[in-house]
Length: 149
Image (cartoon, rainbow, N blue to C red):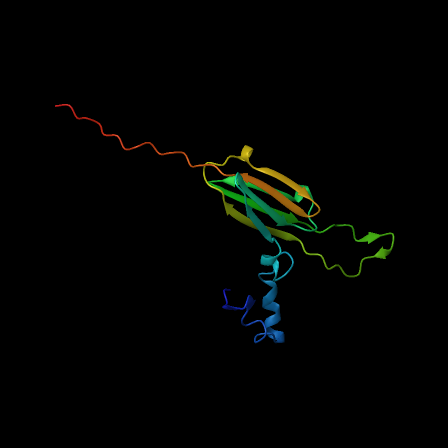
């Protein structure tokens, strides 16, 4: 359900926070709760030869992150599952405050960029992407065909 937003927070969060409404909050709960949209924070730096993106993905392993390039859009997605191990050397797990789910973000990089052009490195919870600047290919000028007769 789409609700108005004021100052970056949901307008009705405080007004609608009575026990009957709390059960509806779990319907759209994403990875890391209602603040999931703010988790994949990205810095974009423009350089002479291209762009440098730094995306915060704390707690993810390299294998849980996927990069795809489709129709000029670079899609970054991360999926996290819960560990199934419920018992360790300290005893039985009583409460676990870890979320599972997925998040995704897309960036338009243009049709001239290919998968080979993008350099990616994941280190210390930060995904660094280097994307070169490329001029779009020129579309052939309109040519006319002579009609015989």
